[in-house]
Length: 215
Image 1 (cartoon, rainbow, N blue to C red):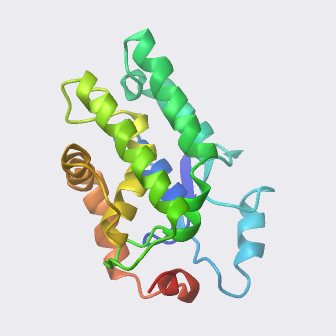
Image 2: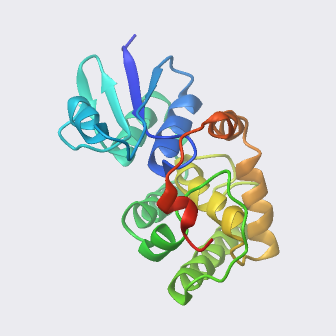
Image 3: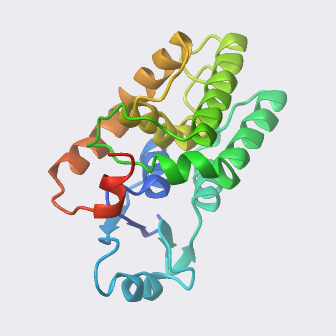
């Protein structure tokens, strides 16, 4: 059995950490979580001690480090093959939209950073609203092609990658379709997400800039 340690950022704010942690929990492999408070004196030095990337999440596997959420997801998928859709066309589509989330949607990242404790409905910039509309339309299209309740019927890595985005819709009151709203509810009712959210609600650490965005 591999010795697994997952280094993560704050539960309330670290969207990439949530993705990796949730996927790893779905494997049911035993692992240790080590949380590093972000944006406090000395935090960068702590991150660089974990990996040269200086970011989280990082998965340490028997001394070897995997410093990227998508690479961590692929490691988990090798351990538990059903984390990706079985159908080849669905698999290709799932990997495409995961890559899109991994590399894109800059406006919604910038204007609506993950903040699980936040609930607001203030005005949002047009580029953020445009990306929210694009995401909702993509969800609707995929949910319409499958039986749900998730994007490819059963829960997959694709749902993990869009869970932090779903929380942004809830936190900032971003517009979405009825079908997408139901999907968001499904993601936020996931047992492992609720476990993460409960830890976020007990945190006392605050990132002032994130809490001030569009306040």
